[in-house]
Every structure is written in C-alpha cells, then in structure tokens.
Length: 86
Image (tube, rainbow, N blue to C red):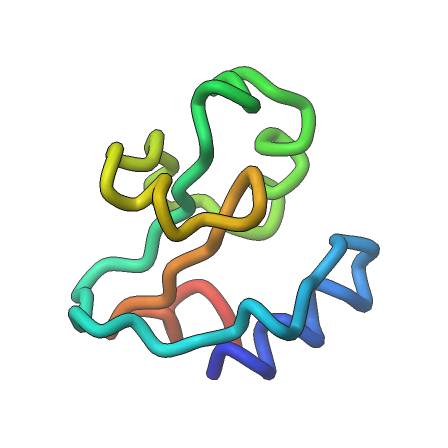
C-alpha cells in the first residue's frame, strides 16, 4: 500500500523518497501525516496542498519520532488507509 500511495503522490508532483518507504514497528489504526514543527508550521502551503489529497489528521511529530524522521513530513498509513488512497 505504501508503494502504491507513493506512486500516486509522485504522479501529482509530490517529492517521494523511496528509500524511506518502510513498515512501522508499531501498527497504527488511523492514517495520519506527521511533520517536523521546527521546520514546518501547521499553516504551511505544502501541508495545505497535501490536504487536497489527504483530509485526515495532521500533527506535529513527537520528540521520539523526530529522532527517526529524515524528511520534514511523513505520511503514516494505518489500517484505514484504503479510506484515503485507492
């Protein structure tokens, strides 16, 4: 699902780093977008553009999540991801 979603987002012009496609060690129920709030603010135009495609939760990354993030934002696909991306 992550790879298919990445291809769709790339086709729409969003930069995708395929080396960062990975499975979360902790499975999540709800899909969400996390972002590095020290680099991106909640009202950032990029997050607004993503909102056109993804209307789910957007939240700042926790301090623990920031330790593993390599990009300013990451889309985390949960069990409900088929509701957002088909």
